[in-house]
Structures are given as C-alpha cells and as structure tokens.
Length: 184
Image: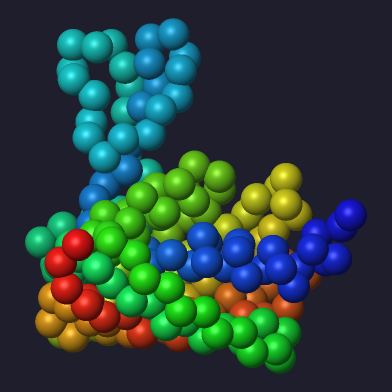
C-alpha cells in the first residue's frame, strides 16, 4: 500500500509526531560517536575521557531562544484539544494526559531529529515562540516543511498553531489548546 493511500489516517499520526512543539529552546542534542562507531543521541555531551566524538546538532539552543528562554509549563494532568485540517477535512481530538509538556516536547523533537528532521533556531517574542523545521525521511518519501507557533499563558496553558506543506502530501494545519487541569 502506498503512503498516499495511508495518508488520511497516517497523516494525522505523522503530523502529531512531526509537529510536536519544537524544543530547540529546551536542550541541546548531541550526536555521539563512540570509539566502536556506535551512534547515540543525548542531551548531555560525553565525558571527555570516553574517547567519543560529539557534535551538537544544528538548530539547538544557539540563536534567539536560549535554554533559559524555554517556556515553563507545570507537570500535571493536562487536557489537549486539537483541531486538524488535513486536505480540507476537519478532525478534532481531545485527550488528557499526566505529563510534563516541556519534557514531552523535547523528547519528540529529539526522536524526530534521529529520523531526519532538522529544526531552525526558535525565535521568541514575549510569550510567543516560533520555529520552522523540515523533515526529509527517505523511507517514507517524506519531504515536508513545518511551521509552529507556541503562545504560552502562564505555566498552565498554551496554544500551539502548526502547519505543514510539501512532500507530495496534502497541506495540514492544526491548533492545539492545552490547559493544566491539576495534579496527578
């Protein structure tokens, strides 16, 4: 089955992953090549006595939004109301999760970097964070451009606006309204 036939279902799933809020402002990602050639990714550089080579992946912390500029969102029970428009069709999803949104965002960006997504530096203006990324994943014949804007309202709410285009796939946009409901 071709990717285009899977698109109505998989585009939603892929977009959830690829459009996860860019955490470039949150942590550096180090590509570490060990003495035996093993490649790992970490948010910490290797110890200098391990004989490993490390490279900081592009689009991290350098630039306008440094680590201290990361949004501050409290751990707890969060509700996520997400409205998608994919190829002209609307889809709404509501979920609740006990999470630390900043850690989750960082995890997804690191995961997507491993499969071929690159992230530009995050720009910050007040409580608004904006970032562009490109995902080129040959195995999925994917070459898409993503734009994301996160507007934070204190430590317990945010709105994330996202869009994706290119890669011989239909355009996609979404708005996620997230709010912390309490402790969990």
